[in-house]
Image 1 (tube, rainbow, N blue to C red):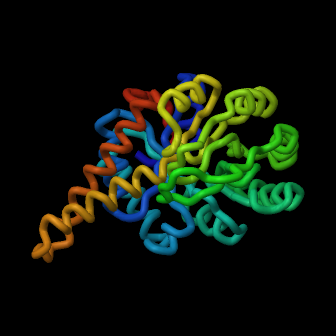
Image 2 (image 1 turned 120 degrees about the horizontal axis):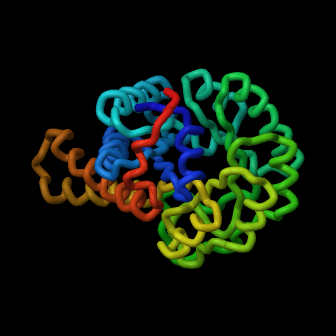
Length: 291
């Protein structure tokens, strides 16, 4: 069922596991996430970027996720979240559409401007009982990028993160701690920095760039208090590689449903394995879910 993100995150905090936030791009990827959640008996966050909204349309994607959550994944909690909203206007539209959580990413701006814009979003969102994720230290790279190394990965300053959280009153915090969007050989998680941010902010921490991080480092980060882990590139790669192969293997097929159907299973596999890694498997049966 579609629930408020706070219900999922609070349970994850109590259970000391992490929730996967999975980027979707179309019906097939939404179904893949939902089927994985059912199979793993796991809560999940389905998140869409501004690009995905531009491609699918805000109302269609909102209704598709809601319908899938209520009718296909009725026995597992699913939340809908905006990933990397860049403007007040785009965040406002998602709040109006019924998202329970929005990410305002002004991390590319000077910290004072980031605080000002994020505070405006928080003021509006909290009136509507919507959670807000803020970000300090821009996460580099791009979803779907797969190269050897990425240079000059920015690292957030603890004092900036603490100042940001205190002034904006965000509900969840993302900060640059060594990861990047995409898959790169030199990604890392600076555990001491994560530990200090968690200790001084007391906020749920969102790890961006989860696709490119080795499993052991993910497990260590969860032990240190990472509550949400974003997965985007792994889904894109699984989807597109499966589709390309199926098209090559069936060059005369003209039914798009037959060509696209295997991509659902490919996304499901990635999401299911992530849920097992994050510790959210068999965690869907908690009580007092707020719909």
